[in-house]
Amino acid sequence: MTPLAKSLTEQQRSDVASYFASLATPYETALGPADAALLERGRLLARSGDESKQLQACANCHGPGGSGELFATPYLEGQSATYLATTIKEWKSGARANDAGKQMVVVARRLDDRDIAAVAAYFAGVVRSSPTEPGVRTAKAHETPATIAKRIR
Image 1 (tube, rainbow, N blue to C red):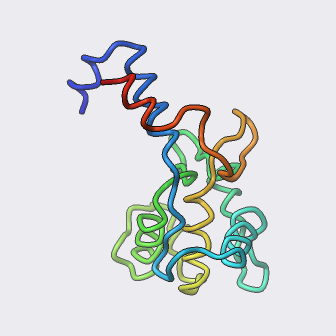
Image 2: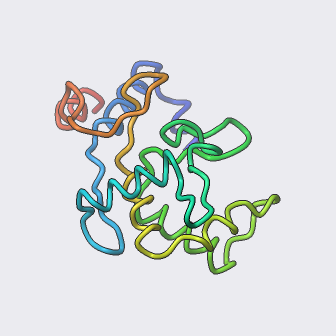
């Protein structure tokens, strides 16, 4: 990817980024399309955690809206729900073990399948509404993907 990206002008890189940023994020999980209750559970876990399960909020480590913390924790906002759910299940089963502090193993083992689907669906739909404030995707960008695609060809 690096040689291809280096061959693009600054404007072309901006156009490609705008195109991908404008694509709608499907709220698909292993449980099917996310409903309002599932997304609300995901929002609760992301922002507040669940004291009854001794779970801290995802935001405590992954930042507001899942924005990540440079060199510390990865971003979650806008990631594929399937990818997030699969990754959490890998932590839970022990198949994934690249967390030196073992924090994600502890968290994942306290999540049931519905909670995993909820968190994955929630973060799949989170986008930055401003540089400092997270929001949930509610509308497409001012340009359609087709318009952007024509401009970058």
